[in-house]
Length: 350
Image (cartoon, rainbow, N blue to C red; front, side, top):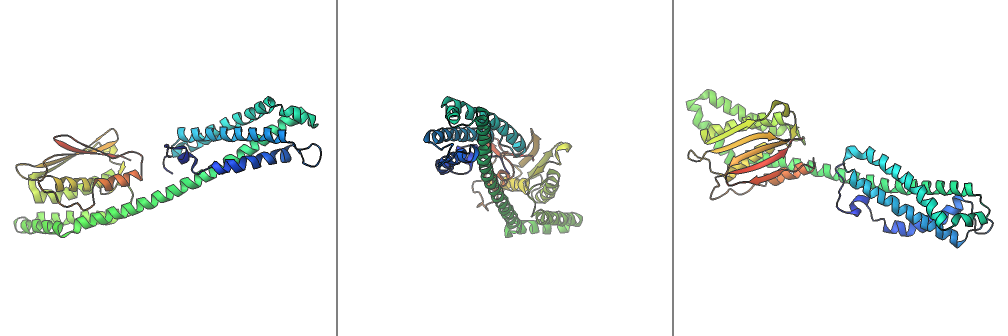
């Protein structure tokens, strides 16, 4: 499950419990004296309205109080790995609040005096009151938690499906980009140009082109991959671009070895390079430089800005695709910034 939504009480409760309280509190209050105290309508000790009113007030206080504790705990402990801690702290607070509030209201309204008049000893009244309040709290809290976990499970399953669809869409878009006629035309032209001049380099060119295609097929079912793998394939892709543009395209990668086993979303670096190529001039007078570094758990992709007058029509691949896939995996955001000289994208390392 992902982090719990912290915006509204409805998000934290996960269902509209208004009618549950309106109908449930009176019914529970009606049953408690009958079940736990042995009070009956037709014989001694007899059920009276003051007893019901006192029980209803105690029930509402316990219900609303424990509901507030639950909302606080869910807002305070939002991460999945904090679930156990939340349940423990929440349960402790409820077990303290429930009997104390029950006894306080009972004594305040002289409910126990009413019970004594009905022939129920004080110690039994206290025991029955604590037992009934704790039992009711456990029952009601269990309903809330079951609804909560069912809702969180639905959200988790929905997110997994969205992630799967987004991954497949990214794969399809990447394949479309790589196999579109323009891409093939450029690479075939490059290959034709280097075959007569340098057959050995032509073989290497074909190998790197094959490596890029193979990578796309191999990671089609992966949500994240090691950064090392993405870097290796990016170098193969950069080889194709260097063969085509020469020194007009420059890619530098400076990442510490210990961060190469962190994970990122597949195709993200390749898509960012494509995005830079699509929007910027690449020429001898204006070489395009892309730098990839890491800083504070972020992968920084920076390119100099030299915008084209006419930008190619978008294929749907790019920042929004990367953002959406990261959003479904982690709470860490993809950050985009721009200065007069540079366009910068920060990808979270997972």
